Length: 401
Ligand SMILES: Cc1cc2nc3c(=O)[nH]c(=O)nc-3n(C[C@H](O)[C@H](O)[C@H](O)COP(=O)(O)OP(=O)(O)OC[C@H]3O[C@@H](n4cnc5c(N)ncnc54)[C@H](O)[C@@H]3O)c2cc1C
Image (cartoon, rainbow, N blue to C red):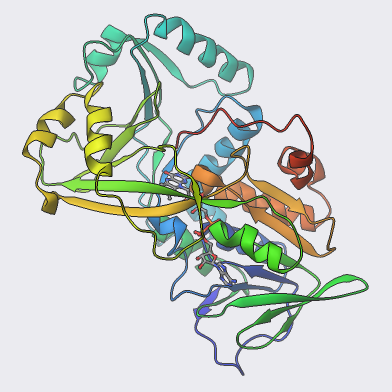
């Protein structure tokens, strides 16, 4: 079982097979697989709790409806892990809050059915064979809240959302021999001729030959301090939760405007809305400021294809809105970096998950640990750091949650 505590200086383990910098969902998932491989793992989190930064700011959703084969494979594997959580972790007493109510992409384009049909065909070719293609009449029959101008939709019933708190804490609990050290900040690395020799912390050093960077939006800044260039920047993203309106259907799927990416899903007692609007990169921060124009902007956007939101917007009171913001840890192509750092042997990177870190966490953690154990190189190839030095690195088509 994993231990989660605020260690005293004396309590901090002095050696480890693997030290992970960051106790968000990615660091904790990595710890879980390292523990399963028999490694003595220490995960450092400088905040008061695990999964309390970007992980807690997220919409908590997961989907396999991607087009890129590497993303399809990764998310299918992760969703399978969520579905088998009790069996994978040995914890039969935990509720992951799994809601597989599906993901619904809506199109109002004239050629929506053909365009979405091509995507579904591509997904089928790439091993995702359970996405349904619906025309306008079919989608309105299944989901009566959808507007008349919607011409087509895709729906996958096994997509959905979960509790990121339950995911993170239960993965930590299930980590064999894992130590999760809260209020413990990794301040740097010591290296010798072999590579990484220790991770320095505010409670003293931990000797290790394997350090994993999983510090979310801080990854680029932290790596730079160690002399390594890792192209991860912090980009603000909002979430608006609206409660108190019975017309928000509790059984709806995650519903996305395929053209602009604005989305909403039911949340206990209401709905959670979001939209990845263009934002400049910002300084990584634990206190991301919110912009109160966001709820109005996102409500207007989702109202077009799901008009009940327009009616709610007219009656909305500020007290009904809970607005928060976090930062995507973003790479130039919006896909993660899962790699060994060539510049410093013993340093591994599990960073840059952008808007997909919750859904990718189990499989991303497994892949990184396999790489450490010398058996995951092929799978990790698409996620190598060096792709950013090459001209073929391009922005992912998957900018939507
Ligand atoms: C509004 C919003 C909505 C989102 N919705 C979704 C979604 O629906 N589905 C999805 O899959 N993803 C979503 N995401 C993205 C997802 O939240 C992230 O990809 C994921 O949480 C990244 O996890 P992480 O562990 O890398 O980062 P974090 O959760 O930020 O964890 C990194 C941790 O490292 C710690 N740390 C940093 N530096 C140090 C140090 N020096 N020493 C010790 N600890 C350190 C930090 O305190 C932090 O806890 C969303 C993000 C936002 C902002």
